[in-house]
Length: 275
Image (cartoon, rainbow, N blue to C red; front, side, top):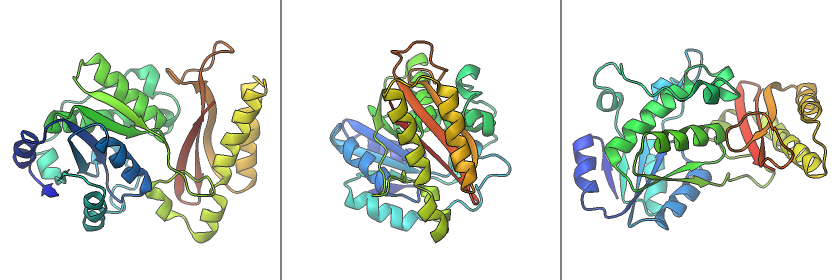
């Protein structure tokens, strides 16, 4: 496996890599990332992964400075999973000058859910992903379903900008107790880690109720928020939405997803389940 810290080096390697599947990450990798790499390997001749903590997608009070940087361990895991090339630039490579050009996703898609609580987040995500796609020029790019809204935004960006890349989703990988794997789970104390699966259990409860025919979504959402709050969480939202655009359901047969974000101690967790 080759590790590239410059754009020129990565592009030179890409020219002889054949069909490429790309897995962008911010590092501090877990089994969910490795599962994406394994899926990527089935779709292409070579897998390229990137490791870059993108300042543009962090808010001023978020954890950019404390986000775990574990490059050596990450590269060991990626090499073991069969990655051919790792692109690990520093900020001077990705942003050699102030980034004055940005991708602004549709307001209706980013003013809701995560966008309501993390202003500017999806603008930063879309901008860095477009830049990475331009650098790597893959045939296929994989993104996890745990970040469901992010996946929607990036799919729409690729389609509307006519980028010749296939975007593929990766299923959420969970611990045995249901907690969605996340790089930020390491912030949880032992007591918080024991409590954290409650978020998943609330999603399951809502999904089961909807499948039984309960379409009083507001009631289901309110009950789940109250349940989390009663156990010390600070919920941002639990919302039943259409899968296609994450807007409120209009018809009983709309394919749905239930999404949640809540803070447990200092750790903000997100999750979702398709209904």
